[in-house]
Length: 336
Image 1 (tube, rainbow, N blue to C red):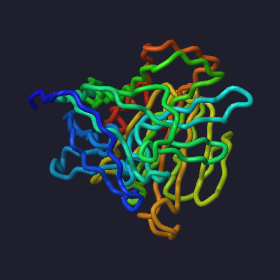
Image 2 (cartoon, one colour):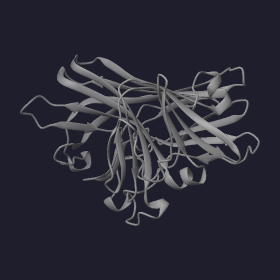
Image 3 (cartoon, rainbow, N blue to C red):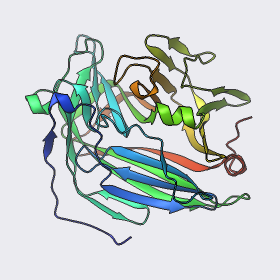
């Protein structure tokens, strides 16, 4: 694919509240073909560069692309990086910022951007304002479409793919890097980023999604998050689904059966913990209807007691290895 670039531009895109579950199209797409599995990533250039496509392909069925990412209300779902600022005592509380936002005061909104993409690499060409979505403790919602919300940073999405050789054949590695540029000097008691994968619940059911979490010799799983679940040692609740916050893990492996072959996504270096949630009623009130809910996996990066200089850039980056289970095992990511 030839490199594509256009003049810099970033504009606020506001959708009416009635469109909060709108699925933005994947306008920026790249892909890689490994020995047994193909993967395609697609971002939305109109809603903050949020990932709305992460397709898995069993190469025995090369025309059957399975998108595992929940793209409805992708400004509040999809594949994206968010962050939370813990304010000082006496302040407003924990302030939540997303690449874009949905299900909130201004409906679904995000900033446009232009991207250079070539082969397996996507680079944002400008910075998007990052406006606070809500305050965690009170639920107070903000939207730049309503001229509300704190802004301390601008953000930029960059994704890079590569083929990685193993003794069992090549796998795909996506590196999702999201950068923050400070607008001002900042000092916070804690700054936490999360990179989240929101997953289609009906696709998870069809593909028998299983999740494995490993820490040393301890393996939790298979966890089947289509149904309510719990995780040993985690803090869990069962309010309209299952919601678990865990401690550190060496890695996670998410596995779908794609046309007869188990295909996994291995996510390493989960040293600051994981949140795994199954929502039953996100899009409609019927808890038994798989299209009403979603599954979301959050990997955390926590920076306690941080000082940030104006103009400085910090980046949250995660690797995602995609291949068959023997291939991931050859890289050291086993599910046993």
